[in-house]
Length: 403
Image (tube, helix red, strand yellow):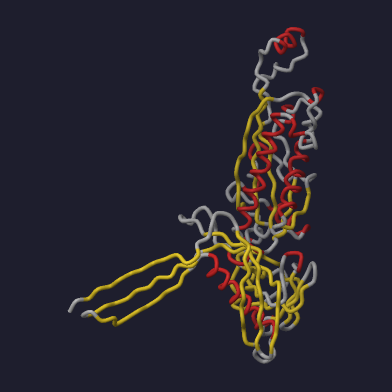
């Protein structure tokens, strides 16, 4: 017996670099007049259609025995990243529901390390609070245009993040989280866990899922005498002597507002020629800031910070606090401004603490139930879980999560 196995793989439609906006169609049957459940099923079908449109691999496996085809198997697979999925059209005919979903798609990286698999959470707008970036050595400014860099830097970061439109950004740039800047973010009371209890308090007060903060570690001149006021130093400048380079080094940190644990931390640095404010250079991050060489370099670093924070938060799940439980009805502290829509489903997790570590990080335990939203308002939403809340011990401050 001669057994020949032939394997043929072809790419039907491969994704190209960058995100591509496509529309997919999904259908679902409406059972027991449950329109929300049908909408959720149709939405999932539409997203599968989107993935197959963008990048699909068709694998055909034929088995030939003694010259005759005995088995033929075809498999379809798709590896894509999907963001900002939105229902743009909905049509009902009898018990059949048809929806059209529009989304941004891009190909999954080959190694899998350059991108995360955030699923549906990447299409929701997580709430983020941005605090001040104090200067570790304030005397390094030495110029009126740089003295307020600790507030101007996070304000510029807030403006860029808001412009992206993928996050709900809250500015709290006058707040300072760290008491000892050289060791930030570590605090003396909690050296081992590197967790900040004031982050949790701030996140609770602002209703934020994450807190973005940082410190400006260095913005000193390479040659402090380059812009001196003595006759000799002025003469050196006219002759082109003296190094006028100013450094800039800042560290950005992102903390989970629920636990206070860090989820991202990175240093950014640059250096370029600098001129004082009185020489025509505008103040830090102001309208004319980029006209100077140093200002343009620092603005580029702020752009890098914005992109890095966005990428880090895109990899995190979407979490909403439960504010009220009435029988099987659940109220969440997030709504339409976060991207939630009727029919969305969220997993419920119980928040647990132990008596011997009441100040420690709460643990999350899967409650084994899901919330299906039926009413969505701008800043809150309600849904049902299909069982009585107290029976599964769901309480206020528990969490609903989309991965």
